[in-house]
Every structure is written in C-alpha cells, then in structure tokens.
View 1: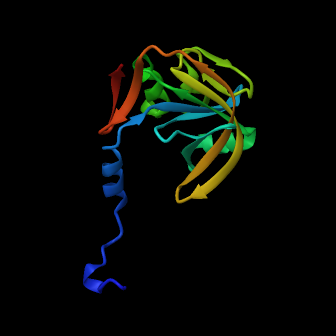
View 2: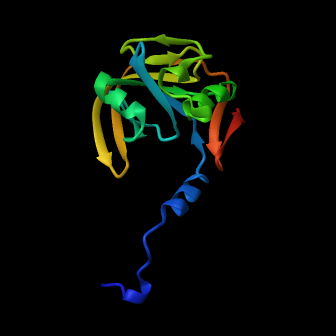
View 3: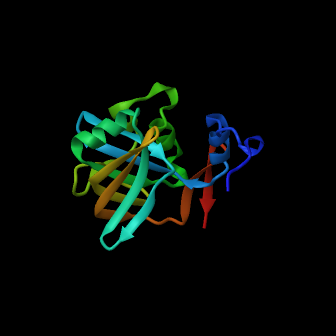
Amino acid sequence: MTTPASHVLAPVAAADFRAAMRLIVGNVSVITAGTGDDRSGLVVISVVSLSAEPPKVIACVNRSSSTWSVIERHGHFAVNSLGPQHQKVAERFSGFGGIKGNERYDGADWLTLKTGASVLSDAVAAFDCSLDEMIDRGTHSIIIGSVEAVRTQDAGQALLYWRGGYRALDA
C-alpha cells in the first residue's frame, strides 16, 4: 500500500532530533583512547552492553572528533562511567573552555589496566577494551570493543545527562 503524497512527512530536522534526544536520560561516560601525548577522549551517553559472553560493549563516536582517529590508530579505548563527583571531568571532556586532547586529562587521577587506554581511578565502572570494529553510519561510527579488564567503585551514585545538563542520581 502506498502513502498518498499529502500524507508524506518531511524528513526530521537535525535540531528537532537533538531536542528529542535531550529528553532521553543517559549515563555519562568518558571514552578515552591513546597513550602518552597521543591521547584524547570525549563524553558519550551512548554506551551499551553488546554481549556478556564474551564481554563486549558498543558506543557511538562522531567521526569528526579528535578521539575517533586516536581510537582507530591505537586500536583500543576505555569507557569510564562517571559519578556526580566527576562533573568537572565531564565538562573538560565535553570541551568546555576549548580544552582539547591530552589537556582533558588534567585534574583527575588516571591509570592503565591492560590495553594502555587511560582509566579514571575512581570511575563508577571502567571497561578497558581492545577495538574489534568500527561501523560507519551517518556522522558517527559504532565502535565495538572486547572488554579486556574491568574496574568498579560503586558508591551508589551516577552522573546522568538530561535536558542538556548533567544531573546526579543517588541510589
């Protein structure tokens, strides 16, 4: 059955899509990649479990971000789930004040587990991943990672993103 031309809807405008997405509550995570002076990172709310056996995660990263090329070059990334005490970390990795690249790591304690990607020492949960695949769709790549190591520090709190801002969630 075909739809009459009078019932065909116009494509969704990017601004309308972004406004609707801001109404979806998401856990704030920082994806880190690279080593030494060649590292970068960004904030995402698009991290989910893909598989428990073997453990795999997926996230979406804008291909125009500086972090995308670092993930591709180094073949690893870490997902650092943030708590409310990490709001300043989230702001730095969001690029507030024009902070870029390696400078985003200032002011927090970082360590490495297995792949060499930086893990926030007091992250609520951290997943150290080797890169399996990058699947390009639209402006982003879906990155699939094999979880090589995990670290948790569950304090009963999480940092969320909703309506264009960071918010604390207490258990």
